[in-house]
Length: 491
Image 1 (cartoon, rainbow, N blue to C red):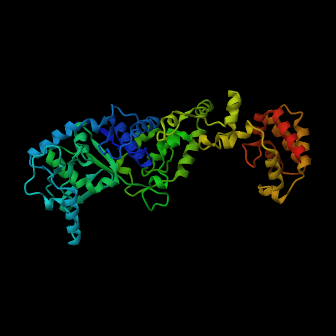
Image 2 (tube, one colour):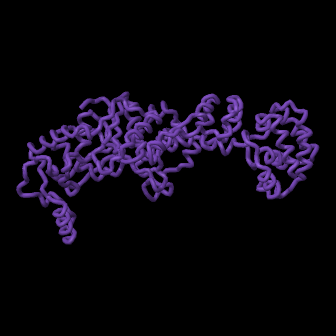
């Protein structure tokens, strides 16, 4: 095998790519890029009963969005059946594989017998005395040679197993498709893979893989086992039921790929410091499989949200405006082709469609500091494009949620009248608005925690908004005075 670092991500196209799979792909990608090598994608589509046609495109789209484009054309196992048969024939000729005539009914009987005897079922203890010639209509089974093994895992360290961990297993099924246990070893060899990086679920199978490497007389690559991504409570492996979502859902909700890469990389890995925010270049430079923790990594979506907010705050306003107006597609796994092709509107509320680009950029400049993901835009900005309902304004005045308004209910009419009068002569720059409202605080003998919520509710129909002076400035003089007057009249 070549000494050039070559890694692969080898998913089965049975559904969408989620957090655990994306992290495995990322660690393989970082390992290759750090060494100046290649990262490959292999589609392990030999389980035809669980195959999902759209899944391969979804996996490719997910990797592309995250910036992990494979360096070579993807390899598909379903297009290599003749190659696996050739390798299977080599094992037959070496006396290390045989046609398996055992029916499922017979297998069940053998398992029941082992269970009744309180023994582990091992097929190698029940090999047929005379195996038929393999013609492809029967499964091809590996003839193991059990032994103890010691090996080094790049993450888990020194590992060992006893002979009992090794049994005869199926290489090629009766439908002509190979099993994972066989096909991935052939493919890794033929693709010159230097590091096999995969999830913890495969760890118990490593001894039989080692046995097969020896039977095939090929050198094994370096093995790296990644612990599970765990639920937030740390008690169980994260599953789709527990929030392991479609990676492209994060794209549709306005997460940035850089933030998700940063989050995934630090999910069970650190560089030995307190640093949490890493650029992609920093990750490539610093990543080391030896620093991946050996215990499960807890999935904390709130940390991802915080991290994404950080990346949004770092964006130039023109780039943020571009992302906010971007359109995406319906989920890959929508029920029909028509649904999949429908475009989802941009992240702006529908009412923003008529607004000018300059106005929307000004709005973004106000909410950027608070924005954690782009799907929050409608909630944070709708009042910039649509007048709040009078009923909502009156409710917040009469039944205030704000603690200061509850303790010190102001004379809303007096306050609103004074604000309207003060702002009528303003040039409506943020600085002039600030100066005038600060002077008004003294004249009304009140404080910002009382006056500013009164204004905010009248303008937005909400108890929260971006900073008040900038909000008034962006809304503009005409809209601001009209909304204040409308609230006053309603009272």
